[in-house]
Image (cartoon, rainbow, N blue to C red; front, side, top):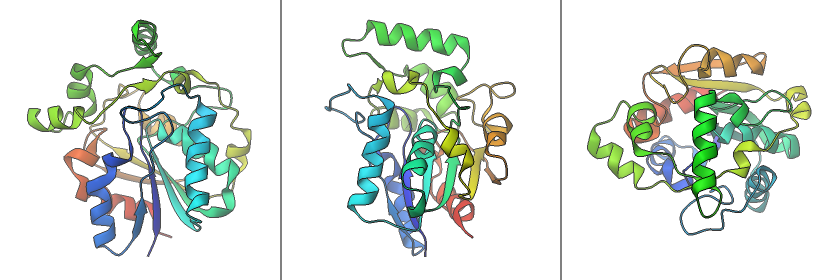
Length: 241
């Protein structure tokens, strides 16, 4: 039996993992899905990346979770890397699921194409609270391209605006890159949230881990909505010893 802590990505909160957790628990595992500070609807969005990280550290410590498999999806990859620096002794394995893994000194925004950077800058400047909301057209075509329109609309309704500061903070990751914690990278083969090829998740992001376990499955960036059972099965494979 494994204990999973699933950390969501941008625009999400912990509820994104509901169907995945149901299957993990049906298989006899424990699973937790905290919401990162500044994420979700109706909350203060004035947070930086360090506060995002601290909120997950506090969640794990408050529940006294140990020997955990810590998974980060997309933006959540940047969070679990920093969490691992703070509480490495509580972590059994890290899983980066279609996740950003910046080089030392980079931000998440440094790892997206220039047109995306420009769009995020514009959306943040036009917002009242310096947040970015993902346009539905991008969600539909690039993030959840393996679902029908009804599922795309219902899942999009669960999203909320993303604190921009957490996307542009430069991260000191020297300690992360020196950690001996085992790592896995979970990659969905139809994921076009980052353009495949030069900007793609694998091998560009995954190769930064050094030695790692690669687990692949069909699907989009948001396969937790389109195929939660299949994703749960692959998370188990990525997390096992």
